[in-house]
Amino acid sequence: MTCVSMGNPHAVVFVDNTEQFPLEKVGPHFEHHEMFPDRVNTEFVQVISRSEANMRVWERGAGETWACGTGTCASVVAGVLNGVFDEKVLVHLRGGDLRIFYDREADTVWMTGPATTVFEGEIQL
Image (cartoon, rainbow, N blue to C red):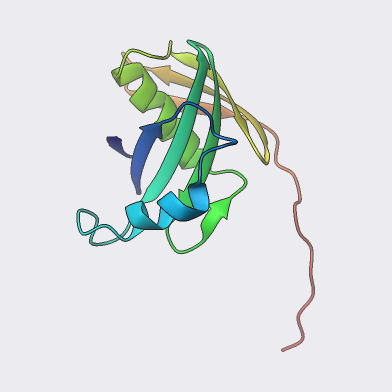
């Protein structure tokens, strides 16, 4: 596990296969672990190559979500720090792909990807 702050807390865990990983079972253990008194977002990342990955995320208070921009950025930073990623990585999430560039010299992370509607609804108050 590599912990990274993107203004919110992230625990990045590298796994062999994100599709077969028991996220619903493991995610809550990270979120509610005593090490994280304010809870934590946890990213489970499968390295495909130095420039490509699959990722699933367990967000604190929400459970699994289809995408998380700060989590994807945290995952690439963690991968660069651990020597498994180059500075430009294409990350595949259930909600779509994001391209992340971690400029180590400037200590800045850039994210590029589409914004799409995944839900519409109405409520009467």
